[in-house]
Length: 126
Image (cartoon, rainbow, N blue to C red; front, side):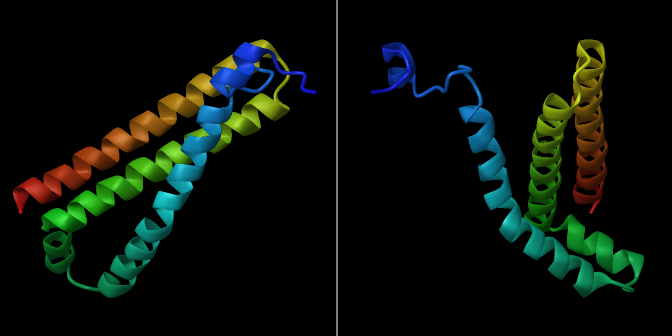
């Protein structure tokens, strides 16, 4: 016996009719961030203390630029998903919740755009 409606069982949604997509996005970004973070740590360790020209040359390589963009976008999206859960769970006032959710999404998008532009400027210039 189940408390789900037949339509809910067919769609695979929980009682709130949402959340599964959010759950999977968070898990997929976490899985993608494991190798990307290992690559990022390797790049930082490899070029720590290196001359600026060497670092720009490394980030100018198309594969490194693409991996950096993936790391930044996946990391910020993962951060925004996690902060959304925190705000939804712990902020009870509707106005504050709405404002914080807007701020989290706007900040993540703005930071992502700044990082994307910076990496593309390095990659295209080199």
